[in-house]
Length: 480
Image 1: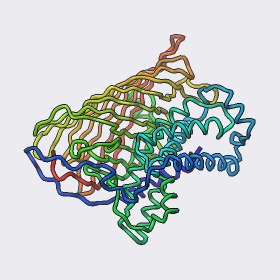
Image 2 (image 1 turned 90 degrees about the vertical axis):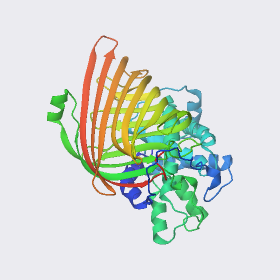
Image 3 (image 1 turned 90 degrees about the horizontal axis):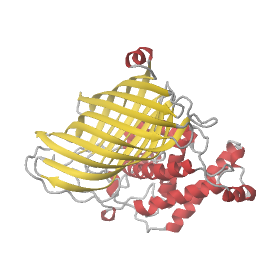
Image 4 (image 1 turned 120 degrees about the vertical axis):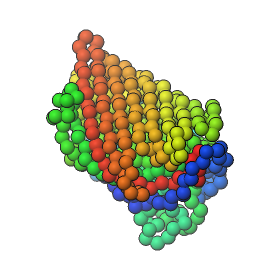
């Protein structure tokens, strides 16, 4: 699909985000008594260039996305799979749905990215998160029947649908932080171009509408309280499957580029809408295959269940998108999570945060010896899991984070196997200067695959990374 465009765009993410982000920092003062709630971050208070909701416009633009992708693959890439006609349409309408045999990058990254464009057709035409979400599945189904000659794929529908919704809403908000409707001149143009990889549909629409140069208030999503952006680079030990000591001995050094964002904060702002708070991270290893990690978690809904001046607790419904591909390990998943989060005051500006979550893995892709079908070297299946996270933050910025995620995936397509995985991570952020931090990040991935014939495969993947990161933040006026 749009894999080539996607990889080029993501390689520019850290640079463009760093150039385009606001660097306003509101002073964070220590407060030991309850603070009043901040105003709700809602779209109707400030929508920038306000557009009347139009389902017809969203459907039409989704049709244009499908036609553009199909014609690019057929005319430019000369791929016969996209030489569609009335015969291929009739055949696909008669065939049932099945799992396909496409490459991991295409299925777990290309399709969700394309789904984010479908989602953007709704959001950019005034639709809410909930109204735009069904359009992603609709446009994906249209593509499966009419966009290519292969049999309709159920995994594409799920990955494009759920992955497209998650990436689409995050990209919609990231693009809003990059653009600045109140700016002008060359800087304004650079911001519009920097938003292109995240929101190509919105970028083209804004150009056609003349909104690249018109001035208007910025939308509520432009710079929410609690947002922290970091971009940087460093070195990592990657690609070391085997035992812990053996893996580290045989591991390779690689340069690492990264960008991550903590957008919004349910503990420092009153959130009303899906993804008013989310976190996302991009890791690239230029010497080891490019994009190694793209993970994002967004808060769909939540409610507070207890609060004092010293601690607060919330029940959350979250959506998680995962793409991990370091050469030795391939894992991708669309997950819904029900979690209990807490924020407890330690001293001064220091707070302790935790999250305990139950994960429903709607569909996961995981590689293992003997996995896959034909040219596809990974299994597909649903599963369950959990998330345990704890960390210490200072003024809204995390200093220390530890995380553990066990999961069980039952293969429905590929090897007849059960996959048990464990993912552990620890990260320390050491302040060096006002906007500069040194980050030490370690991960340990463990996979045990049990096959129907009684055989087992057990592999471990440790990694260590050291970054230097530039940080910019929009902090709350108080620490509560």
